[in-house]
Image (cartoon, rainbow, N blue to C red; front, side):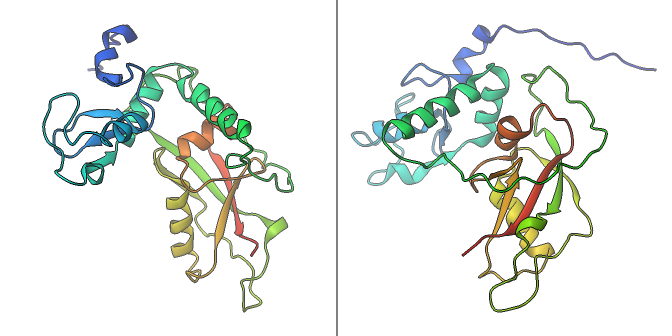
Length: 235
């Protein structure tokens, strides 16, 4: 017997008390949780608060006598939930950060555009338009391809970047670019002194980004799988 799943509709305002920071009263940005009482705040808010206090601003529990900031942990699950629930929050935050760095003459968020190559042609599985429906530990399909234009030899050898036998991977969209690079290094048996970089849609990726961030910025709405190209980083 098939059981139809009921869809429960909830207003965002009903969830605000669970996804907003009690210090700035805005939605969590870089959600950070204390290890002592498990209360969550924006990273910038709680770090600034603990410069003059040693206790949790929400319940008063002492976090640490001398180094409270060492008892903070990035809460990627909570941040993922907030981005799923609140439409356009992620895109707006990325835009604000870019404007912040540009106004101060920094180029931290600007990545050099590498030479483009033709994108693989295949029939893609279309992604649902309901992009803000939260699913626990949502999965993403990626295809790891060698970037032929930059298949330069490894330092001290004449070998070029090898190809993967198994190119398709399905993993959590919370996985970071750095995690994918480590996986590639292990599978391809590349020495630790050699640096790999990942490219998506002509853009070199920052190691700290999650696959979800990469998808939203450079791949959506192309569908699945998301193609990531790897090559040796020029040194």
